[in-house]
Length: 330
Image (cartoon, rainbow, N blue to C red):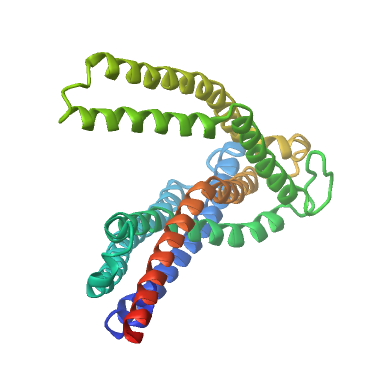
């Protein structure tokens, strides 16, 4: 599976490609930090202009907007190139895996599920990595970069529930995010969403299997198909009701999420100890820290799926290697 990194043929793509992707993601995060600083300067300028008419010039205003357009343009261009490069990088990783599987397929074909491992699991591996890999790494980088920024911006500012404690805002962001995630996990467990999803897949599989059998078996009657489809319909309706309550809780949390930073900053805003620019910087940094943590928690099901694919491919390769050892002994 990792011959992409060990075979000389692929080392330029694997190691240099990894360096390019990680470096580009780090630059994107740094640009986002610069954009956060821009928000502080821009809104301070707006506050100054509103407090004292004609205190800034139109040239200063346009220059500030132009600086944002420049930063945003670089970010968009870099993100687009990284997405394009990552897709090619991961397909080459899959190609390296496929080429090795093809070279040993005379032995691999004897292993149960070989075709599924070679075709389905390799494409799952590349697609999950493409969707999860870069964004997951970027979320971690965001968390590392913006947590100290949030801490620095909140020093000396009174925070609801935490007073003047310097770590109050960072702690509040962590508590709110973890609390919200646990709330959704508990709600999903109460509603038995995993069980409902399992029953849904099971009933759909039974219905699909009977349809396939019915293509060659004339004894299968429409009544039999109708009975199975009724089971499918019932489980779908059951899932709609369960997800109605789950989405009610999820959407409520996401809407409350919009106000979370303002709630923690309430004492500072009322006391007038922060400028409009600093408030915008804090809220944006708070959102980045919060969003990064939420992304990590939300991604656990996908991470588990990736781990499952990795385990299947690892077991498949172990069986291939074992068969090669046996063949050599013979």
